[in-house]
Length: 115
Image 1 (cartoon, helix red, strand yellow):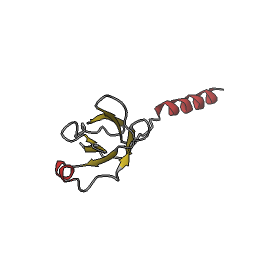
Image 2 (image 1 turned 60 degrees about the vertical axis):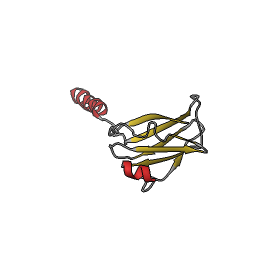
Image 3 (image 1 turned 180 degrees about the vertical axis):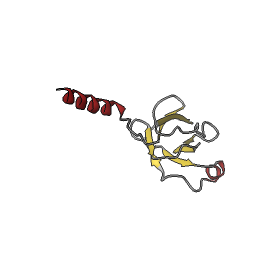
Image 4 (image 1 turned 90 degrees about the horizontal axis):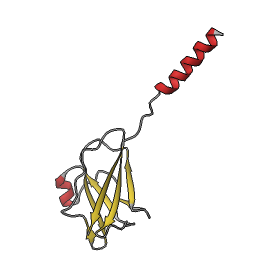
């Protein structure tokens, strides 16, 4: 009986000791100047301000926002990214282009306004 109790305690403690490893990602939400969500916005991430200004060498393939105005870049490095968001004649140039430093092992979130 004692051995069953010990085995049970070991198994239970193993379950609580397990910490899931989350992948680092960045979810970007896009709103327009009125605060409404914007779908089909073209999003590009850059690792340097120079690449952002030239719109060259994006860190990942370009993504588009979904019907909820969001897109997620997965498996990213924990650094600062420069974000270019564009739809028709609206963009975020000059406003909110740099993320905070991304936190590893977390779903990081940012909201960008395009005008």
